[in-house]
Every structure is written in structure tokens, then in C-alpha cells.
Image 1 (tube, rainbow, N blue to C red):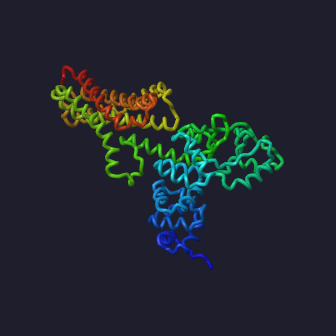
Image 2 (cartoon, rainbow, N blue to C red):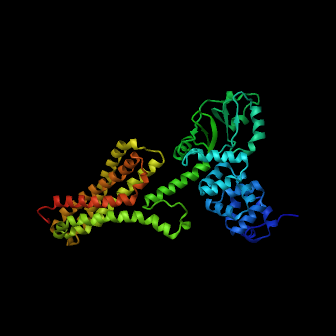
Image 3 (cartoon, helix red, strand yellow):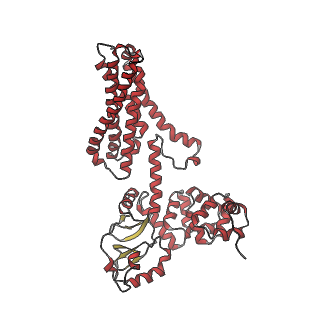
Length: 460
């Protein structure tokens, strides 16, 4: 009997409410990520039933594509033997990611459901530092000896390669397990069967340490263009591999955290729609209060120049223009430097080079905005007499003040992340709103100092 053909909408409806005997053969022909997407649209009870009817390995593969929140909910709804099946079939690195995000009591209970072999692997991976490559690696890889022939290698891969995380690279180790080289699978496929592995080795390979942080791994992936990297202990013994898909998840999480901080809010642990109302308020209110207190200094600075404003009210017209230009320039600079630090393009030791670069950039950007401000007042004065007989001095004041404020904003925005990095703090804390607030206050001082110098004896 031929299998019925379903369009996407019908398949989604069948997954949500159709007979399980009819849904199973349809799901079995889908990739795991699509199965996870379909199951994620179902009710929690239905999710459990769908996982039960799937073959164990396929169910575990689909389970790995669910979000951590959905994985936790599903595990809580399943029977103990069903949970044990999923955990034992999961890849070690994905299982570690799940377990490390659970309360300690729950993690211990789930570890007890693993087979002795899987439990040993899980405990070993969880034993590495929290933010380390050791937590992300998998022990599922293929190793070969340098004295093997190509035929030996291919036979070994056929027998043991089905559980490997990837077969793009094979790892050459000595009898003590020390990593000697990594060789692409295509070289074995294209070589004479009697050729030895040592003849295919070049001795050039890149490896991570178990204690390396994820940022180091991301940088190495970018520079080597590899899809998997070996991980060794301090003695050079191969203990696992890290694949790029696991590092992409970490990279996305860190980028999200930095974006939250740059936007002036504490990083959210959960997705936006899953974060509660009061936790969201708590995350956002702290920085808003700090920035608000900073802006109060702006009012203090204006009060200090109260007499100048009273004598030349026209100066007050340009306060928003001045402080916003400096804040925008500072925000630009701090965002560029923070991202460059995150990508490993610069380090805190590049401070002088960055200072020199931003000094020239600030001068040019300030000249552009200052020139536009000067021309605007000059042209406006030919049609409207609102600036009076001293319009040229006012235009000069605005032009020079803009140059000074923009230059100052660029320097503060570029140097503050480096300063925080040098002291071991998170550069993203020097968020764009924080830099803008700081430049607002100092920008007013620059503005009125320039005005007092140029307009003394005329308007002031």
C-alpha cells in the first residue's frame, strides 16, 4: 500500500492530532531538525507521544534540535525509562549543554539514568571548567596509527565510524594517545591502499586545550576554516573534538549577551518572550537608573553655565545638537571597538594604534559635522535675523564646539572598552548609552568653554 502524500500544512496537522500509526512513517522520512520543528508546534502531551513512536536514535537526534527550555519541559513530562533512552542516545556534547543548565539535584538524578559508559563520559565532560572547551567537546571521533595502511584506515572507519561526530578528519595518535596530526578523509580515499598513514602526514595541525575558553576556539575556527578541531590535555593527549556547530551556539549566545549590554540592559538568561515581567524590569531598570543619574549631571553642568545661557539664550538652541553629536560619535566608536575585541581583531595591547587611528578619525568627523553646523548658521543668517549681528561668532562657536565634542566622544568611546579589558572587565559594559551619557556631560563643558572664549566681549 502506497504512503499518502501530505503537503506541509497537512503534515503539521497530522503531527498535532493525527493517528500515531500514520504519523510515524511520515516523520521517519524527515531530517531530525524538521521533526523537531514539527514536534515543537505540538502540545506537551503530544510531544511525548511523538517521541515514543519514533525510533530511538531518530528521537534523540530530533531532541537535540529542540531549545533547552523545550528539552527540560519534555524530560519532565516523560517516564523515567523514556528519559533514560533519550539521554543515552544523545551526543555527549549536546547532553552536557543540557545537564549543565539544570539544577544540581536534577542533574544528579538524570546522570543516574545513564549507562555506566555514558555516565563516565558525562561526568568527565561536566568536570571541566564551566566556560571551557572541555564542556563543549565530544569523545566521538576516529583515531588511526601512523604505521597503518590506507586499507587499514578505511576498514577501521567502516567498522567504527558510524558513531563518530564527523568523518571529515581522522586523527593520528601514537600508542600513548598523543595527537600527531589530523588528516582529511579525502586524502585516504584518493590514496593507494598500501600507502602508510605516516606518508600522508605533514605534521601541521591546530588543536585546542581542554581549558581554553570558547572565544579562543571561535577565533581558531575562523582562522583555520575547519569544521572540527581536536582537543588535547596539557600532555598533548587527544581527549575529544569540538565541532563548529557547537561553537556557533556559544558564539550566538555571547553575541546576544554583548548586544544586550551595548543596548544598556543586563543580559537576559532566557529568550525575550520567555522572560517574566518582573525579571525583565529588573534587568532593564538597573542601567536606566545609572544612566538617569548620569544625565542629572548634565543638568548640573548647565546650571554651572546658567549666566552664559541667560546672556546668550541663542546658545541653548544648540545644546541638543552638540550633545547628541558627541554621544552618537562615541556610540559609534565604542560599538566598533567592542566588536573588534570580540572578533579578536584587536587586543588591549593595540591601544596606541587605536588611539592614533581614532584621533585622526575624530578630527575628520568633527570637521565634517562642524563644517555643516557652521554653514547652516551662516546660510540661515542670510534669510532670518534670529542670530543677530554676531551670527559669524555664533557659527564659529558651534563649528569649533562640534569638532571638539565629536573628537572627545570618539576618543572616549574607543578607549573605554580597552581600559575595561585591561582591568579584566567585560568591554560590553561600556555600552553605547553609557558612553553617550558620559559624553553628554563633558560635551556641555566643552561647548560652553568654547562659547565663553569666542563670545567674550560680545554676547558674553
